[in-house]
Length: 69
Image (tube, rainbow, N blue to C red):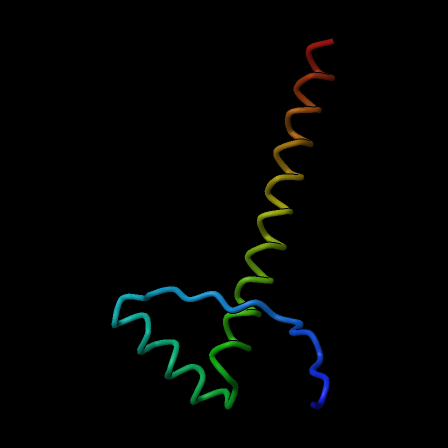
């Protein structure tokens, strides 16, 4: 028996409205990439932006605390 390598990815299944699914398919076709590649990039960008928003909120809260001292 040939040993197998452990999987390095998880599979997540989700649904999209038909119009959005068609847009995804068109981008995938236009950019010659896979749906997985496109969605990984979109999620990475979202996570980076989310982290930025969290940091911004923390900095604003800290500035308000320092201003009230």
